[in-house]
Every structure is written in structure tokens, then in C-alpha cells.
Length: 245
Image (tube, rainbow, N blue to C red):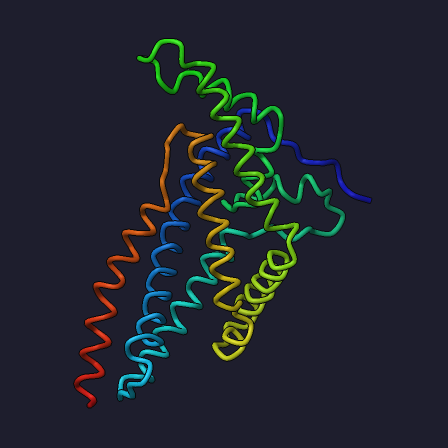
């Protein structure tokens, strides 16, 4: 028999959402930067250097595998769902956890009481602009809907469900065994990692605006880290290939 559900107070719910979005944003920013480095490196090798053989290739492959593993670990944190304990209610399963993850944040954002408080708080986003209260409240609720929808879309698609399942298997294998060979075998594909990263970016951007009134443009940040990654990988790999020729 399941124990009595552990419910959160309204104040605790809002405090938890406020804390979650800041922690999630930090992991998303790290993930975007690693993804940019990984994509840019692969594009450089498969593009202008695709016919070049150089002695640093093994080192490059190790770096590439390390980036993929780290991105997978970052995403595993972002999409973590606590395991249900024996005789534990579904509500307690989520509420006892202090993990800052997208599924747990979205679950709280979907609650009417959380939505009500955030909408009311949004009315004070622009105190110096008269008559913006209703517009700000509407914007808050719209961004909540978009954050929830972005995560829901991942859950209902075949590709999304497969990516999540592969990520969970990777996380369990790494934490249970910490063996590099097994970790590499369980690592989601690049397409799966990039799909999850896109969803994490979109959910976080919408949620940050809804929760804190901060218009966080992560796509602009993504473009900038791609530019910086190209500025590193192209000369670095070209120089490595030149030395070996």
C-alpha cells in the first residue's frame, strides 16, 4: 500500500521553480556550448579535411568521444526523473526530489496554483510602464504553455521517446558501472543528443521568461558559441593536418 502523498505548499512550489530554472539554465548553457564544439569539429573533419589523414586523428577521436559523453551526462541531469521507491505514491516520488530537471519543473509549471502565482507576479514585471499588467500576465501564461508544449512534444513522438529511453539507459549504465566501454555503447546517437538539447533549450527559454520575466534568447547564444567553436577547430585541425603532411 502506497504511503500518504507528500504534498508541497504553494510557497515551496514557487521557491522550487525559482531555484530550478536558474540551475537548469546553467546546465543548458553548458550543453549548448559542448554541442556547438562537437558539431563544429565534426563538420570540419567531414568537410574540408575529409580526405586528409593526420597523426593526431586518434587524439581527436578521444576528444570527440569525451564531448559526446559529457553532453549525454549533462542531458541526463536535465531530463532526470526520480525512481519510484517501494510503497511510494507517484506524487511523493516527484515532490521528495530536490533534483533540478526539466520534467520536474514542467510538472510544477502545469499546476494551476503555480500558474496562478506566476501570472500574478508577472503583472509587476514592468512597474514603470503603465497599463502593462494584463499584457505581462498573458505573456507569462503563454510562455508556460509553450514550455509545457515543447516538453510534451518530445514525449509524444517516436524519436523523442527513443531518445529519452536511450538517455536513461546511458545514465543507469554509467552510474552503475562507470566503465568507459559500456558508457560508449550506451551513449545516445548524435541526432538523439541534439534533439534533446534543442528541447532543453526551448523549454528553458520559455520557462525563464514565464518564471522570472527574463527574455533569455538561447538561440543567439548558440550562434555565438558556434562562431567561437569554428574559430578554434578550423585552424587547430588544419594546423594538425599540415604538420602531419
